[in-house]
Amino acid sequence: MALASFARRRAYLLSRNLSNSTSDVFKYSHSLTAFSRGFASSGSDDNDVVVIGGGPGGYVAAIKAAQLGLKTTCIEKRGTLGGTCLNVGCIPSKALLHSSHMYHEATHAFANHGVKFSSVEVDLPAMMAQKDKAVANLTRGIEGLFKKNKVNYVKGYGKFISPSEVSVDTPDGATTIVKGKNIIVATGSDVKSLPGITIDEKRIVSSTGALALSEIPKKLVVIGAGYIGLEMGSVWGRIGSEITVVEFAPDIVPTMDGEVRKQFQRSLEKQGMKFMLKTKVVGVDTSENGVKLTLEPAAGGDQTTLEADVVLVSAGRTPFTAGLGLDKIGVETDKIGRILVNERFSTNVPGVFAIGDVIPGPMLAHKAEEDGVACVEFIAGKVGHVDYDKVPGVVYTHPEVASVGKTEEQVKALGVDYRVGKFPFMANSRAKAIDDAEGLVKILAEKETDKILGVHIMAPNAGELIHEAAIALQYDASSEDIARVCHAHPTMSEALKEAAMATYDKPIHI
Image (tube, rainbow, N blue to C red):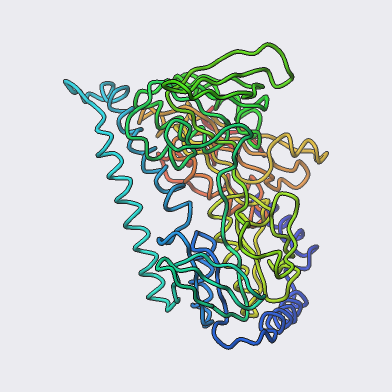
């Protein structure tokens, strides 16, 4: 049957002309076109590539450009590299998620494993110090990579004065001009505000403020039930805060597979997180100690009030494109400020490119990194590619939820005949052995070809397990392909194998 699966995949590739010499000739001619366009005359001999923004997309683009032999400068206003992700996003939040999980395990799970304490307490300053140490080490590490790869690093706020020139206001009050044949906008995104709510990073905080609270709030209200809100709610909920999540939509994490979402919400509720769905915030009062929110049903109705010590506004992010001088050079944007680009990440202005959160697509650090690599490869005369339908997403709570590809709702909307295979971690030997068996693996595959369409995992370390599925989707693998790969025993990854077996045939252990 494995040979049959391989034959199906080969036939599929041949039908797309991806396995013959004609494709190679096309790629070569495509590359020559990209090279001639990338180095169009711009009146500058200073840099081959200038990157505005030193976040995941920007610094990766800069390093890749230098590795491809292009003279490169990266401009970053923050004063430290890594962008939102490393400084006030992905990295510090994961540090606090891990630290708070360790405390939660000590108070809720260790005794079951024969490990007992007379007392255990949270040392919040020490927890924050560990987080800050991790961030500092990683930002210095990127500076080291810049030196290693000979990327010129300019600190300051950059804005266009022409399609080949960027004016940079440096921290010392000076202004310098950086010239480049190709300029990449990689300025990322900023916190999305809500009407009538002023973020002061003390009582009403963004994710940045939630990462640096000086004391544990007794009551924390989170506005927005997306990735960031649920992660930060988990951090503070584990170490003592009473968490209430207010969400305008009828569901948490609306992009998540519906079946997995329901299990995920039940898990968070068991941990003490409360949800007020289909609810909107219509008023905020900070005149006294704490915060008083006025709420009403999303569809309209009677108003209620909700009190909190701290309110976290987590209603998404918005592209950071204001003040870059894009209008001055004629770069086109959409109505929410995203820069419009073609498949080569080129804007409508020759020599100006954009990647990451400032363009359409998932607002994820790893997507921005792939954008950066592909964009620079086009500039250097090579061929780059990013498939946004195959970018994994992870919610780093406990259990984690990770997914890649399409949800069941999306597959149904396409009208595709499909099969579903599921396997619970309650039947996984490793999960049972470590007494952490909440969750499942769910696989969606096309009925006729068995091609995998989407994979969804709710489990401890789901963010690590998902990448086997990501590789499978990237190479148009079938569920049978995964099922026939030998997986080490006992491991959590065996659940993915069993779910694959359940998709095309039958699982063994349930």
